Picture 1 (tube, rainbow, N blue to C red):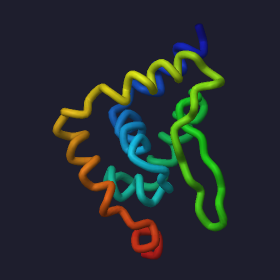
Picture 2 (cartoon, rainbow, N blue to C red; picture 1 turned 90 degrees about the vertical axis):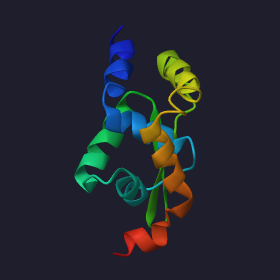
Picture 3 (tube, helix red, strand yellow; picture 1 turned 180 degrees about the horizontal axis):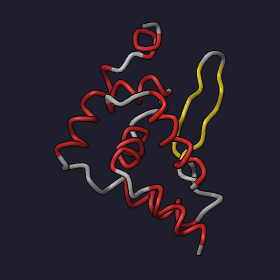
Length: 114
């Protein structure tokens, strides 16, 4: 039951749901997520840590970049189920649509060099 509650709590915050929806589009670094969400870098990092601990998000360091992506759900059936469902949920929500529209314009080289 603890694992289920951890996943549900992780998805109880609107910014964490937005991060999931953004990561459905492409692998992203903290700077890109920060630019899309327009919130502080420490807040993005905190949200990513909670999502990671719940088994929803993973990361891989590649050179200078730390790339975040959706988990395959192998470590949590609850995470796998919710990630699968979230692919189909909220896509018509105006806030989510607006975020997804930003994704093609997020250029990590420009954003992170500021």
